[in-house]
Amino acid sequence: MSTGRLIAVAAAVVVAALLYALAADARLGYDTAYQLVWGRELLDGDLPSYEIRLAPTPHPLQVLIAVPLALLGQGADEAMRALSLLSLVALGLGLLRIGTLLFAWPVGALAAAVVVTRPHLIELAYLGDADIPAAALMAWAGAVALGRGRPAAVLGLLALAGLLRPEAWLLSLAFLAWLAYRREASAAVAALAVAGPVLWGLSDLAVTGDLLWSLHHTRTGTELLDRETGAVAAVEQLPRHLNFLLGTPELVVGALGLVAGVLAARARIWGLAAVIVLLGSAFLVLALAGLSLQPRYLTPLAAAIAVCAAIGGLGWIVVRSRSWRAAGIAGLVLLAAGLPFDVADLRDVRDRVVDDGRALEELARGDARATLRGCGPVAVPTVRPIPYLALWADTAPARFVEAGAAPPAAGTLVTPTETGESWAGGGGDGQPPRVIPPVPPGYAEVAANADWRVYATC
Image (cartoon, rainbow, N blue to C red; front, top):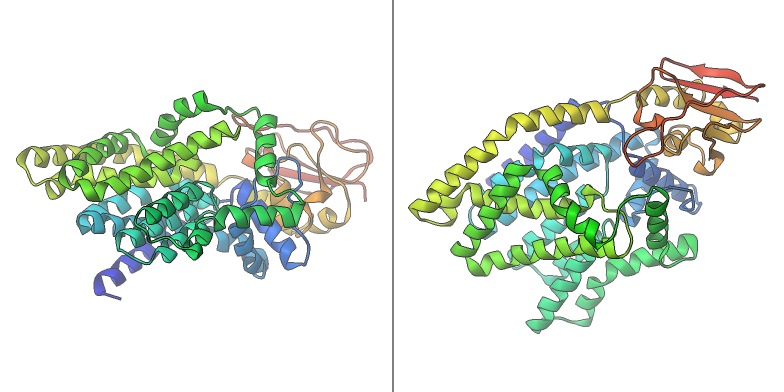
């Protein structure tokens, strides 16, 4: 490995460590907590309990990664968050390579800097969502393709990404079509191109008996949570979500960069433009399938646009003319002007991911652990605490019931206090409301702190 690459990798690890330290008490996301629970169930020799009401869509590769992490016991969630933050910097390194291969290393460096400083991408990394590692794998697939690497390596990376996010399936098929056009396709290459959806479907079939479980389950969740979907919603939300993930300056300079790239190197930029179109189309496909349209689904598209923003900000390197020098300087100024707002957003991100969930964890791993494991059913006011309690108390999510304001006559009751403000306690747009149920007769307090209470009848 060259000195430059060693420096880049070392810098990336330092960035990941700094991000971890900035929010060492961050909680994992709801979806990721379930992936860890399912990984532990596999380690125990059981099938993952996918068929839980309002459980997230399973991501086969993330569930498999959770299996060895389960060996770490109470450190599994910390390890998952560390891997997620490393995935963010791996995404940055992938964009560094892409920018370097397209034009020059400063373009790649700026693209990487844009991605690893986006507050909402950092938030996704803290939560451990599958979108960041999926985007990193797609970016490296693009880097291998640009570097004239072996098609099998490109499709292998996309197959792994396709076990995290379905957008990679479309990229795989497009790359296979390109290989067929160049008469470089083969049966083995074609098998790799469809490996993502095939393996995902087989995983669903093995666990649930339904080859399309993830599609059916996700569509049901979209309906139950009354989330917007459909083509019209996709067209309306796509620019809004991209602005949320990247920011207005990055989108404006990204559009400028796409124009600059076309003028400077038409042959090299068309691949990037095609990826942008395909990833945008994938969002529309999700909408037509009746699935929810979350901003995080556009993470790979945001990463591609970050490369365009780097091209726009370094126009004088890309297009060697006086007018584009001025345009590039203007682009850099615009990107720099957004940094103070990014800092403010980062503070908000930290407040969101570091809440009183640790107080619930203390009870689930401490005084209330035996009760949660042995006194069922365990009633919770909303579904939100279920994967966390199942993970921290090392028990099955099937033991939990969403009781709302009417807990069962016997069992265990976990409820937030009036003063608690945990995300897991409920509330928020598009999510179950915050509920503090009354304690039925016969329940006695088992454990408590300022934010949570645990009661039981046994």
